[in-house]
Length: 77
Image (cartoon, one colour):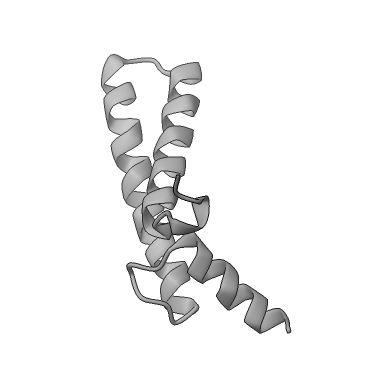
């Protein structure tokens, strides 16, 4: 079984952002198109945010959650 440390950081950021936007719009939506657009917009913003964080950490776009943890541990040491 794969550890969560092997999951792509960008993929995780995209999924979490899309799910958050979908949940928020599921609670407060006024039109059905919002439920379709919310995960798309959230996914795009999550992708951009995750890529920005990886760039600031000088990690490649394909970095995993384990790579991010190791980079943060090195900065704190």
